[in-house]
Structures are given as C-alpha cells and as structure tokens.
Image 1 (cartoon, helix red, strand yellow):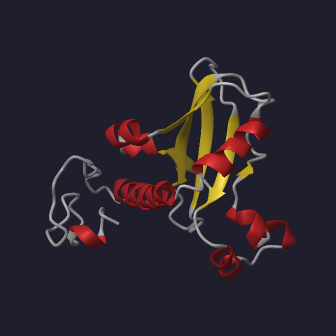
Image 2 (image 1 turned 90 degrees about the vertical axis):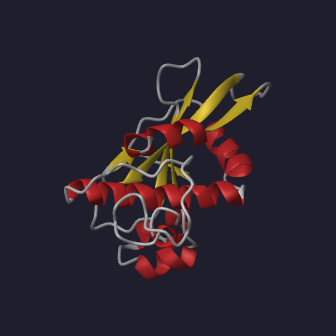
Length: 177
C-alpha cells in the first residue's frame, strides 16, 4: 500500500477538518495539543478501506504514533481476506499501532485516547470514509491525467447537478459521497 496525505489533494479541507485533541493532565501523556494527519492508500488495485493516522503534537517536531484504522466492519475484511491468519479480520479492522513506522514512547497511550475518545464519534468515522473515497478518486484522476481540482467544502452544489470535479457524474454519486 502506498499512502499519501489527504492534504496533498485537499489542502483547504484538510486544514479545516484536521482532528485535534488536547491532553491537559494525564499520567501517561504529556500535556499538549495533538493532531491526526490522515493518510490514505493511492494504490488503484487496493481496496483496503483504511486510514493511517500520523499523530503529532504541537511541541514535538517528530511523529509520535502511526495508527492504522480499518474503516469497514470485520465482515468486510473477512470477505476480502485471502491472506494467512496473520491478517485476521478482527486485526485488520483496527485501530492498531502500525509496526511499519517508528513509534514513540507515548504511542500506546495515544492509541488508547484515539480509540476510546475519537474513533467512537460516528460522524468523524463517516467523514474519514468520505475522505478515503475523495482521495482515491483524486489519485485515480491524477494518474489518468484528468483535472484533479477538488470540490471545495465551501462550494454549494446541488446533489443532482453535474459534479464540479469534471467526472460527468451527478454530485451525489461522486464527490458528495
């Protein structure tokens, strides 16, 4: 899987919708403002339906955790699974610390906060699913040489109007998803 930052294709929307959380006092995490940088797979042959979060804090210049999160149900990953038992559906759904990336001493505590406080927000998870689809479409458009200008979150487009991204589809079937 080749991951890219959501902000590569949608810088304004990424800036407006980046998720932050603040730790004021905790025994296992320093008091700080933390944020999740969303990364999505660009591989056109992959249907992983995952988001990779790179977690940073405002005071630390390095990535503190890399958390992989499957956006679909265990049933989805079970149907998709042809790999050996190391890729059990329950482990593919996530969230989990991604071993392919360096983790800080705070990674486990960050994973606990993200799992228990952030990923329980159904509206946020739905937004991540939307960002996944948008990124995949933008990556495919760029590879095909089509205009990759994204639809701004501020534009008002009727759901039955042609999508402003130029796909030829109705907005409700394209970038609105």
